[in-house]
Image 1 (tube, rainbow, N blue to C red):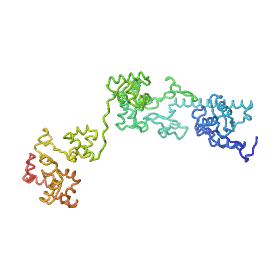
Image 2 (image 1 turned 60 degrees about the vertical axis):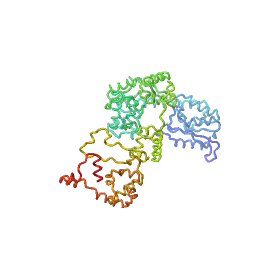
Image 3 (image 1 turned 180 degrees about the vertical axis):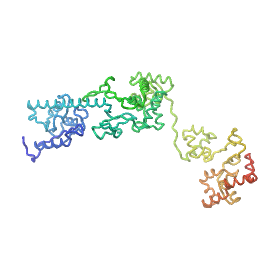
Image 4 (image 1 turned 30 degrees about the horizontal axis):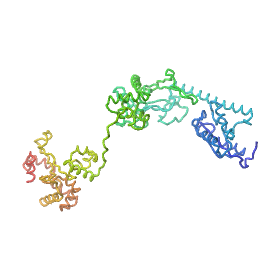
Amino acid sequence: MSIDPTAPALFKAAQYLRMSTENQRYSLGAQAEAIADYARMRGLEVVRTYADAGKSGLSLKGREGLRELLADVASGGAEFTDILVLDVSRWGRFQDPDEAGHYEYLCRAAGFRVHYCAEEFGDADSIAGSIVKHVKRVMAREYVRELSARIKLAKRRRAQMGHRVGGCVGFGLRRQATHHSGVARAVMEAGERKAITSDHTSVVHGPPEEIATVKRIFQLYVRRGGGIAQIARRLNAEGCSGPGGMRWTRNRVRSVLAYEPYTGQIFYGKSTQFLKADVRPVPREHWIRSQTLEPIISRATFRRAAAMLDDIPAHLNDEEVIAGLRQLLAKKGKLTMRLIDECRHLPSATTLLKRFGGRAGDIYALVDYAPPPRTPIRVRTSRRPDLVERLRAIHAQHGYVSAAMIEADPNLPSAHTVAANFGSLANAYIAAGLPYRPRTLEARAPDQRFSKTRPRRKIPIIRNDDGSPFTDAQLVAGLKTLLSRHGFLSEQLIAEQPDLPTASFYRLRFGSLLEAYAAAGYTAERGALLKETFARRPMRGTWRAQAAASGQLRSELPEVTDLAGRAAHLGA
């Protein structure tokens, strides 16, 4: 049949493209070009493309392009009448030749004709064409079987030579490309491949911090008897990174404890899968072993860890899980997700949540356990006006305020948070205008820290003698009295007056000392204030040493051991 390529297309067609590997002989582009030439010679127009890139032809699983093609054909709404494929092997290398014929028959029964563009079948409906097509399908199957057998044999030989065959290695280990002469090349991270295909791959130790983490996991589990969940939390608290920089979980810790290559032996052939069949385990005596790595963990330590892991149930039915939960409840008196994780005879809490529901209450209901009600969540407010108003409300209700009452109030944050906002709880009470008087030294229990030979610190007076709080007018009047008496104001001068609060109290009430000075009529510049203050402050170095040597310091400032005498001396 010969048709002019320049003539308009008579029928519409769809093309199917498949390529299993990137370095295959026929890429998707090469297949499309060959199909386009075939379509032009036969007056067909390609209006739809179905492709499976990087997909094996052994089965229909994972081949979304062919699945979509068959679905469109079966629906009856396809806009094309012909299906173009490069050859029989692109349609599929099914291990049962009748499977390939079945999929082709579905297309033909729906009225679509399948063309194999690179095959020389002649009339595919003839006896000779059918026989040749079936032989081609059998040859495609045998090609895959022979190729798989050769690859499997080559991998076993490399494993026997001590080379790494397979994907990534466990935490604490790395893969390294090695020349066939034994020269080591670059170390590969997870997801990386060797640059030269002919190079071998060997297993080497990873970073020292990862090796130290592996040893620590075995030490905590075998020697100290820690639970897997406890080890995971401890590693996260210590800042130890897990595989890929992720946090440690129960499953990741368990995978480290069950990874036998830490003993120095590299295994190959633990399981087998031939031509997309089911994975079958291989008996241990048939594994290929190679001792090419320096051990990280001794064989005795690994065997002990394996024996302890065997005690942890891997598969329990619902009745066994419920019985284990009842035993745990009877032993601990309560149930929590953390207790379930730490129990060696139960699956993890995550596993139970997936099995019985997404809430902890679903697990507790299995053993008729009702957890105690949770404490109301505190209001996380840090605004000072809100805190002050709540403190005043507590004082109006109870007549006093304490740290214990702040902790018990659900509308307030913790006492530590309140103290952090104001500097101390005392400052918080003062800001709220609540009555507060600190304990004197005489009311305190005897303490060796308060020596009789050293002058005791001045206790700030933050209230009037009658117990009423200071008003702004009283505070300003005290500063004006100091100003008229000394001609200046300073923090040290305020601290020496027993009838006034501390300078910190002035800062809290007025915002700063400069604002308090301005309210008292002392409006010098900040730099001048600091200069004048330091000019009137005695030096603590040379001046005091000279005065102490000449005896003037004791005569000018006689030793005063009691607080009342000290206050009287400073007031004079």
